[in-house]
Image (cartoon, rainbow, N blue to C red; front, top):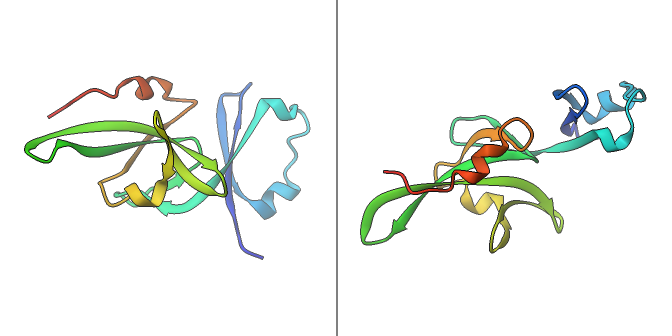
Length: 125
């Protein structure tokens, strides 16, 4: 059996628990209702600094403003599991995560602890 990593956000505690799927079978979360838990899978991918990327992570990507301009913008996107694959959630739709990992993608937070980062999509030098 493949050892799948997950993390669980326990909303009442505002805390993550990290484990593999086998540990989840033996761990008891019965004191919480399912609506109080958000189970997020490890994507199997690492960011540009070697940090594991999970569902619900916020990824910062350096994107050129245009090809004639050396200025770079930093865009922030959340990682979602959609249609059988891990994607970056963008205003235009969801796009495969692996397509953006060569653009200095960096995990900078997650949707629970850093939701304000999704509002930061502004141009930077």
